Length: 333
Image (cartoon, rainbow, N blue to C red; front, side, top):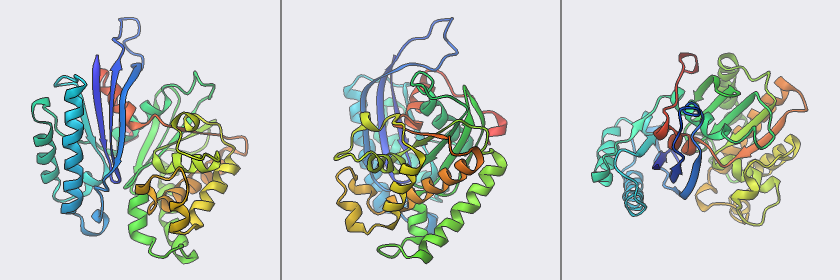
């Protein structure tokens, strides 16, 4: 079964076209196995200014809808039938007062494929992230329970579980949101960093109370901010998905890489050979969120905590959900 998933977030829009193995009665409850056909990521910054204005910026909306038209054409070219494309829109379109313009534009872009963006709840966003991120962890030798941190542009999902979600929450902190709110100096001053840390601390206090950060064996980081930090920690000379995916990185090395990106100038960030141009302005805030998550998790679980990074995330969870819907329990809301 050929399926397609689109994840439209605050900073980027991503496409995954994959073949999903047909389930048998014996394994119909298992996570669908995906064989990747095409994967794309484009930075469109849909959430530009949303935190300040509460509306989607016209230029950002046009950039995003232009990429939607391109993605729709690739779905057609790769033979994805109508009814097997799922388009999930997360934080930016959830927060915007003119989200109806976005919905109409997506419907028009996909036309015959009968696609409408689903503005998922924070609970479902967390469940999809967890499903995508944890599908191959046990086979790769990573023991649960897991704490999954998906650091997006407008929100961060914190999810705890092993085979399924035990508890999860969506926090209104993300690399774009915090950059627009705080990061206005180059390099950031200590005052700027402290102000952003205060916002992160408030959000993580809520996550600790709602989800619980202790009792886990492995922390799994997702999304572009985290994978970019991992590329620095690994000393990569170019962005290499295979080298990054499920790399086992000591927590101290990961946090040192975070600090380098937090304190660096824009020019220094742009000069990194693995840095996507669209992440240069926001990676400092993303690295700060990741550092704070790791510090909290280490404090709750001790120094033997295992840290890894997954290139499989909510996008893979969305594709899996086309085959088998993800169940969202009430306690993950």
